[in-house]
Length: 84
Image (cartoon, rainbow, N blue to C red; front, side, top):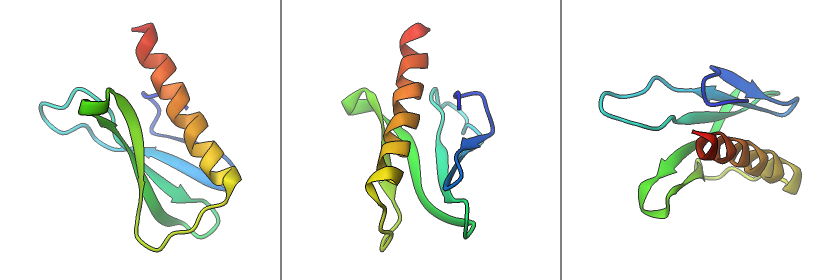
């Protein structure tokens, strides 16, 4: 699920790489519910915090396991960033 892949995920979630906007240095991802094919959030770089963060769309509930998958995905992005 590296930052260069267009998608990645698990049985429950998919992470879709978005096209990079002109002038942006970091990648952005959509988070999709794989079962219902619904957009449930975004992963993006928060410059002031110097880290990737996620924002869920309104009225989306997630379980601890889904939260863990998102955190694991962000941790991989951060690890890749540190290697550069």
